[in-house]
Length: 136
Image 1 (cartoon, rainbow, N blue to C red):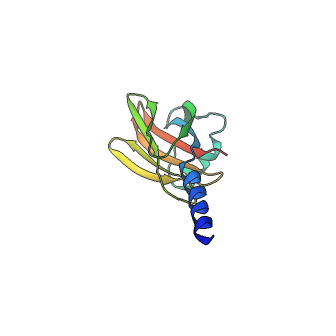
Image 2 (image 1 turned 90 degrees about the vertical axis):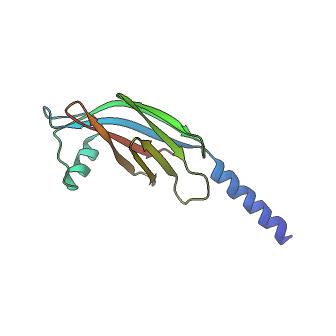
Image 3 (image 1 turned 45 degrees about the vertical axis):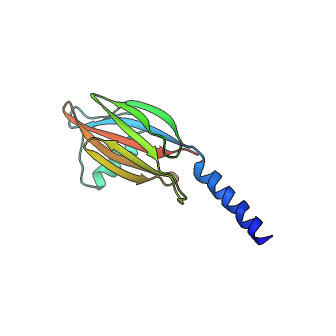
């Protein structure tokens, strides 16, 4: 009976690990152009400022919600390139997402209610920033 309970809990863990995760993905251009912050980006501006990154303009270029399945890459269109996001398989307390925006390759852990900010390269007179937020 203990072995059967162990198998059942393994099955539940495997199902949880295999469950897709919804991730809100925003593509933002941060620059030192005329002062402007799109609605919903003020918290990002404040976080950047606290980290010593000062930009005067934050413009959302796109926003989408992806359903990421473990090990299956999903592409996000950026100006002149593509970002690839892959939910890492396995048991993790929080979703771990591998992000590739050549030459950048990294893995981020998405906590509840928190966003991950990733520099995605230069764009026009500023920087592209990927904003990843796990949705409930």
